Length: 149
Image (cartoon, rainbow, N blue to C red; front, side, top):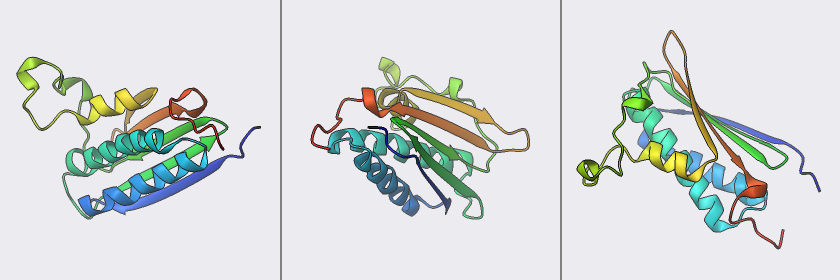
């Protein structure tokens, strides 16, 4: 049975205290779509990392700048967009956290987590500033689909 679409948009100020709010909303959408607690948790972690990166690296902790999160569930496809208002960065220049030289570093793991937990991850850079991250997950093919819903 095809699920009706659901779209949620939230805008937060660039404060680390707001990360959990977006993560909880993402996990709630996943659970309502039939994903079990583990599957919802891992998508929530990808969202958490994306929002943290937008706040820290995109908006440089400037509380006057906003982060917009959009969760769009159409059938079994979940598209999550996280957009900041900052100057952006080059994700190809982020060090590989699996490289032995980087194993002890505390940064650089967010993009790795997002790519691990989601099916697709892509960036769009606005010429005047701002980065938009799109993460996609096919919930029908995701491990952790609850069989009782």
